[in-house]
Length: 239
Image (cartoon, rainbow, N blue to C red; front, top):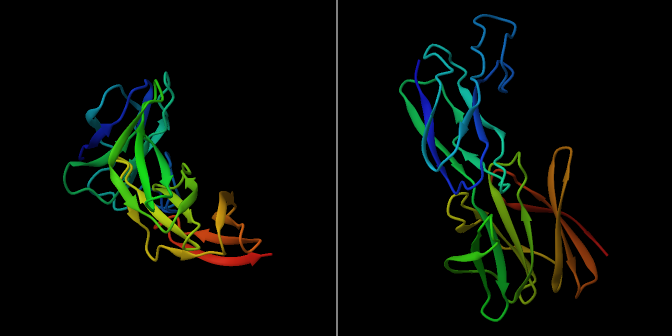
């Protein structure tokens, strides 16, 4: 057996609980037995993490178990409430102790700067709401105006979308869960209608969409969102 662990950052609240479960033959984490030998070992008892820094979970997957394991958050921190995210949660069949799991509990806010065509990033203090600027503003399109964020709990990544009034397109960025820094999504920016003025994301059974209201052309553009990359694919324009 090998130990599994990693690091936690941005934690202020209490009660954050992590668990590791084996992956079943069907592809998902589950405790107990599945048809066909050998049965997976059970999930570990949840580990409460009370401070930033390194953590180590109990060993859950023997070296001989080929399907690997998944680390998950079973309880988010409270007092104050925070939403934490896990990176490197899926582990292959272990061959050594693993410390690659990262848990980030920092929240971020983004503001468009139309005069210089940029987007500013801030970290948010979960107790006071105070903002702290992150790095230098990142270049968006011409006269960025509207923003929309996808922060869905089943998506590992967070995404920020910006409607650029002057260039009539949409910029998409991937959020670094630990630092809040932004990286352009593949193919960004994406064409929109004239003068994109408002944006919203909406989930459905198979994924998430982005909708953009174009004030200058009196249309609404619809895009599907690639949850792995943040890339947009336009599927409709409605007058």
